[in-house]
Length: 140
Image (cartoon, rainbow, N blue to C red; front, side, top):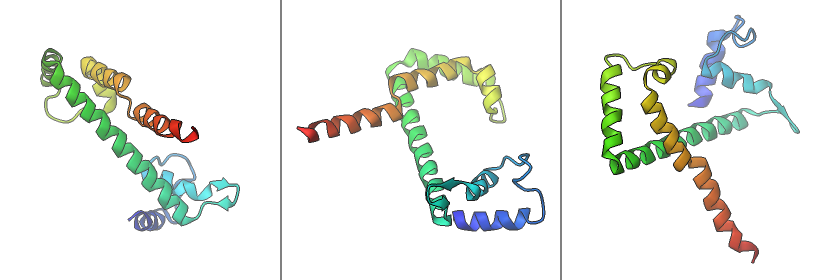
């Protein structure tokens, strides 16, 4: 699917400034920019680009899912916090889903709940701690 999307992007931007001018900030344009990235062995191959996209997509989904799971767990353990969060959402989210900028300005309690979840149960940190614990005994 990534290959097909890159091919479609190439067709759509053929003969235009596309990603060159720096104005186009779509995800596919940024992925197409990876074709210009060099490592020790030269330019990235199409397969390496596909693997990078899949890795980042998977990592993003996993950490977001873990954070939401921990947030739901914490809200279930603290019904008074859950009630305050629900009240803020009902008061400020009426109709369209707010943009990130709108949400950070109008939903400070919601943002604080997310930050507290990340502080207590950082998905990256928990994975790192598990890795260290699993590998600590290997050297002994």
